[in-house]
Structures are given as structure tokens and as C-alpha cells.
Image (tube, rainbow, N blue to C red; front, side, top):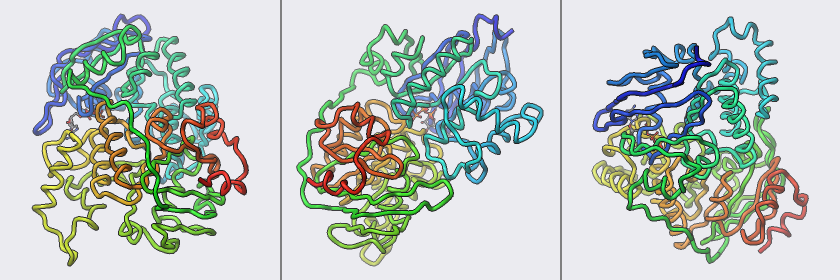
Length: 515
Ligand SMILES: Nc1ncnc2c1ncn2[C@@H]1O[C@H](COP(=O)(O)OP(=O)(O)OP(=O)(O)O)[C@@H](O)[C@H]1O
């Protein structure tokens, strides 16, 4: 029946309210068989909620769902999967202590995969068929964000699938990986599988999707054929007429060395962790340095090393000229180091805690008084300011982190770190899942922080963002750092080669990185 249906999915009057917020307001939408359909909208517009309703994770307050021309009540995700739906969530639903194969086994009915060995073989063959390289034996906690996402995608492709829902699947992929994924999605669509795709990358929506539905404040505000619509027109449907995008971030005026790694090496902390080899890196006050790289090439280790969570085997770390190699996380934070982690709901925040409490997780150094006491009222007030300044969609400082949409949580976390005016800011994926307007605000704030003298390190796979923001760019591959050079001296092709590991040996790094 699925193959002959005229509508793979139709939503009629779908509504969902949370305390203090209407997440979906009488949403109407149709997805045809084999159609790649984008759902776009600002942070908190209700996109994830709508996807969760389709997939049976969230029950709507009202409305109907028509599946393959028949009204259907989705009882839950297992039911949705039996019907032929698969979903890749924004925050991965993987068990960290289990292997890739074990995780996927939990998701499929036993009769479908037989034994773990057979499942392992199927994972390998599906991964190979779609160019999604994953090792079925690795434990999920050893995988980078990008690798975990590949597991989620492969897991959906193991079943007979008629509708694949992807909540920002490309946000953490490199351009090469995105190209791969686009191929996979186009192939699936040509086989009749419909794709529902949430993305904040409007150019990607324009090149990939047949139709787009635009949500604003929980309501459908328009739909279009993306190839025939400009990104600017789509942005206006999403954000209204007040959209203003600052296109240039200016350039830094580098001052003194704020943080230096001198010949730092780290042996792998676990069976699958990446060793760092003789890293020389200097971050200067008033400068943004950007490091590109395919996920899982040592970025996590580099951040943990700078942060004080990973001790080096050799080499030195200097913060503001002080040797802090032997110091831990707290001492480094007190010395003015701040970090925005890749994992925003886990390391970046605690879901069950309020926004004020989450602010305190890292701001207690700046927010406590001279005697170490905390004063709740000013803290709440500062949290309220943070919510306003970064236009975080929340009803107030008492909201839990888990109740925020992904992009709004990202805005909150990055705003929290910027507000502390650190001397050094290390920032993983600064605008992951953030809509165009808010991404621009974050870029402007990062440039302002740089101009005030902070040394900023950005790790991202978004090369457009890297070139837009960074004064110097480089790449990390296999735990080795490429040269770092001004953006205008490094073409995207060269940077792509560096990401693939084609650059001079580490012995010469000190020379190449010298300014
Ligand atoms: N479990 C929840 N409890 C309370 N409020 C919620 C919950 N889930 C979502 N919301 C609220 O519903 C609104 C829509 O959230 P949703 O996650 O659907 O947005 P989104 O469009 O996917 O945003 P983003 O682009 O940031 O991912 C937000 O204001 C969010 O705070």
C-alpha cells in the first residue's frame, strides 16, 4: 500500500502546547512518496516537536495524522518503526557504554537481526553501501559527535524504510560527509522513501529539497519550492522583516600570547581515543583561530587537554605566560579559560537543572562573592539578562535546560561563556543547530569578545563559518595539527587537503606556526 499511496504523510490541524508555550499551532503539511521535504524555522519554532509527534515520541493535543492515505494513531516510536518510519534525533539516543552493534540491536526487533554477529555484518554492509564508515565494535562513548550521528543514520537504514526523519543531520558533518549524505538521501528518495529534513542551512535546503514548509511560533507561515526561492526569501518567511545579517566580522589585532601549547603529546586515553602528537599551538589575545577537521581526529582530545581534563605525556601548557601543565580544570577556569563543549546536553548543561543553576555550573567563579557565597537574586537576574541578550526562547530562569529547544540551549551555553569575558575561549561548533539570525548574533558577539582582547579557538566542520570568523585557520587530522595561516592565504581546497592529513610533518610545526 505504501508504494501506491498518493500521500506518504499528511498532518491535519496538529497542535501541542507546553506550559507557557504553544509548540505547534494547527499545523497542516503533506509529504509525498519519494519527496525530500524540508522543515525550516527559527529556534523554538516547533520543528522538533512536530517531528516527535510524527514519530510517536510526543502525543499531540489535537489533530490527525494520515499515513499512506489512512488516518493513523501513532502509539509510540516502536509502532512508527513498524509502519516504516525512522528518525535521527538532534540529541542522539544512544547508550554510551554499549557498542555500536549493541545499540542498534536495542532498536530492532530480535527476529529482524537474528544474532549480534549477523547484525554486525549487516551494519558493515549498509555502512559500506552508503559510504557511512563506522566500526560496529566501538563503544559509543569513544565516538565523536559526527561518528555517533553516522550510527544513528545507519540504524535507520537497516529497516524497510518509507519515511526517514532527520533533525539537523548535517549540522556536525564535514562538507565531504554532507555530499555523501546527500547522495544517500537522493538514492533513498529515488527508491520511493520520503525524507523529512530539518535544517538551518538554507543553501543546503535549496539544493537538496523538493519542497519546504516554514514554521514560525509553532505555525506554518508558508511553503515553497526551495530551488525557486532565494535563501533570503526563506529567511524572511522564517524570521520576519526584522532580519539583519552582519556579513563581515572584521579582523583581529593580535596581542600577547594568551595560551600556548609547546610540543604537547598525549597518548590515547582509551582503546579508540586519538593520540595527540607534538602539538604546538599559540592563541593570541584579540585573535580568533579556527581548526577544521573530520570528527574524531583529535578535536575532543585537544579540547580536553586545553581544558585540563586530559594530562599530557610531554610538553607544556602556558596560560598568560604561567605554566599550568599540572593544573586542573578549576585552576584553569580561575585563570580565565572557558570552554563550550560539543555535547551541549551532557557536558554543556544538565537537563534537569534550571537555567540559573546551569549558568552557575561554569559561572560560579565570576558569580560568587569575595567569600565564595552565592546570592540567588542577582544570579537569577543575570540569567534573565542572558536569556534576553541572546533571545533564548524560554519562559524564564527557572525553566530546565532539557525543556529548551536545541538551538536555544546552544545560544544559552555560548552566551553563558561569553558573558564571563574569559581570557581564552575554546568553542566547539559555536552555532550548532542555531538559526541564521541567532548564528549571526553569536558571530557578532564572538567578534566583539575578540576585539576586547579574548583569544578564541574555534573547532568546527563548517568551513564557511571558519572563514567568516577566523583570523587564522588550520586543520587537525590523526591527532596532528596542520600549519595555521591567515584565512586569505589558505584556499578551501588546501584546507580540505589538510583535513585529510596532507601537510608537513609535526617537526616543522613550530616553524610553520611561527608568526
Ligand atoms: N518537553 C518540553 N517542555 C517544555 N517546553 C518544551 C518541551 N519541548 C519543547 N518545548 C518548547 O516548545 C518550543 C518548540 O520547541 P522545538 O524543540 O520543537 O523547537 P525547534 O523548532 O525544533 O527549535 P530548534 O531549531 O532550536 O531545534 C520551544 O519553545 C521549547 O522550549
